[in-house]
Length: 198
Image (cartoon, rainbow, N blue to C red):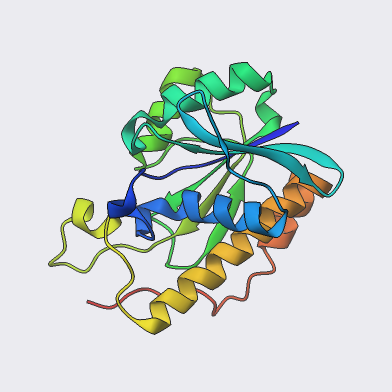
């Protein structure tokens, strides 16, 4: 069993915003692999199924971002997964817009949802996949930026392509392991990502 958790905020107000990258990637995974997110468990929307031959649980915590650890710790205990069987997907302001990176462990950086997960799990040795949303223009407050949507067709296209690439990276992780997923992530073209201009 692999537990894949996409971070975000529940409710229509936050749908398709930068901070909801994790939710969007999980929804793409669900659609591509015919998995229904039809259960509520451990403070999360959950769907169970298979990616390839591997059993997976897809989850979207419903706790709001800053309390994501409450759902993740309960899900880890419910599914009895080891650290290497957990993958958390989330947005990262410190990566250029559209860039996808997967790491085997590490700090939470500036992400409050990940900080809460690390604090409540009491460990940081589990894989995580980050999707870059870039940094806000100078006149934007960071909080307003992350809960905003994409303004232009070009940005929406870049976001969708990044989310799709991220979903493919997750599928590679599930079917072929971390090393292959990291190798796959490195194939993203260097000119794929771009920064939003002020």
